Amino acid sequence: MKILDHLQSEWDVLRRAPLSFVILIGLAFSGGFYVQGVLKQQEISNYESAIKAKNGQLDALRGQLDAYQKSISERLDKVEKTLSESQTTTLQELLGRNPSKINFSTEKNSNNLFEKQMLDVFKVSGWDVGVVDIMGPAGYFSIETLDPKSTKTITDAFKGVDIPFKFFVPDDSSKAQFRIEK
Image 1 (cartoon, helix red, strand yellow):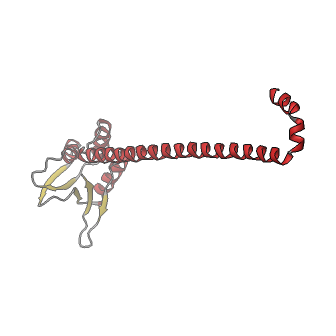
Image 2 (cartoon, helix red, strand yellow):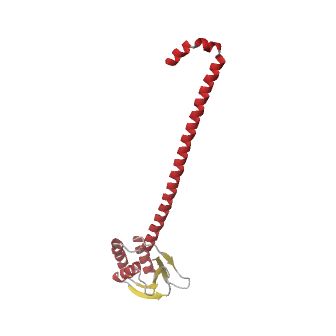
Image 3 (cartoon, rainbow, N blue to C red):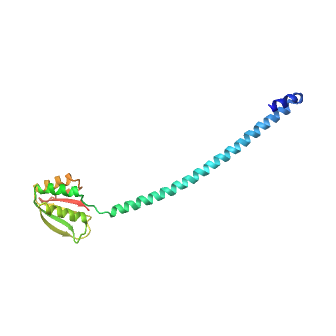
């Protein structure tokens, strides 16, 4: 209210020089807008630098996450595949219904636990198992059946316990072959 009182007391002067008053008011508003623009620009600049800092932190965290995922992946690759207790029991039950003769092909002196478990399951289920050593690291072992009945039994058993396999029948043979990744 003091400003209005002051304007009333100086009204005679303002009435004689209205152009000066208008220019003064215009400069005051212009100066205010300029100061506000500078302050907003500084605020925007502060936000942009904060965003750049956060992006740098995000990039660092993404790098750490990638390294962690890689180490977890490497660890999981080193974990051996094994049969669970329920898979072993179910597989023995399914294979024991119709035991036959198979040839079990494996790398010579293999220490793979999954491979040994599979060999033991067939033997415990009453199958006549012939073991054939193959040379070099194959990354898989194979089971060769000698008759169609045993082929169906093994196929049903593997599917029953979710063991992935590849099935081959050589052109020149009546034998079928199951390949199981280690």
